[in-house]
Length: 365
Image 1 (spheres, rainbow, N blue to C red):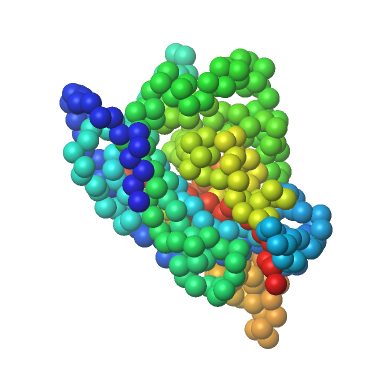
Image 2: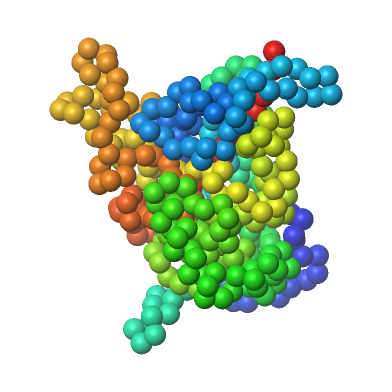
């Protein structure tokens, strides 16, 4: 499903095309490229039922383990977990789909190429621009990992949104139509508050009250692909993934599924709760358990569960390497702890992120 509602209906003259960029890519292997431990912890009400490797939770769970939904109430259990349900990719070349193996679409529509202006030696200025795509990707459902579980979104891998056909994505002034509240936070006090969000996101989850902040990556306003500072490819991609997800919420394409309000189904959430998402890099170099953790001696690290296995079959939690051992992390966490070596020239300059969405639901009987 292509979301083409923002496609201009009038003719438009295209400027001279930018130099052609490559379109590398790789379809994520659902077994080896997705860190399945990120769905944890699994909760019953406010109680944790299962957690491996100290996976993080935002704590937004119903207090009671018992719930009911519907006009004719059905008694059920309050279950919570992190559902791998969305995917965001950031690319330099318009209509390039790294997640689909490097396929390039050709709809005959002009869209600006990605750009990077490196910092000037005199004033330290720099800026970047990139396109981004939003996918529906309910992996647990289309893999049939769990059968007859009502708390799974049904569907298949589907392309939902392309910024190339959105005239707001490359225009800071035009995008104010979507986020006029950005004017409230264009001041030094609001920008300085994002330092606290960076600290909070690095230690745990970002501060829900500072919704205009993207943690250590900067501010999420405006909702477009222009970043007024050059921070490196991975940090910029993390910020644009955050921005596009927030933009999907503002346009009511993405909804809330967590907390007490999400027990009986999704709800409108035009101001995104950034603590409801954890991200995992799946391209160009997937951040899985095997490249973030280590085991004692010659014990094997299980790529699917993220646990170490002794020769006698006993499982135990692995040790973190360089202070960061989890495969996924909340929006806004610094890339210093895990981003080294995740970008390389030509084929490693586009990025794809799996989004694990906090899901609470009432499993009825």
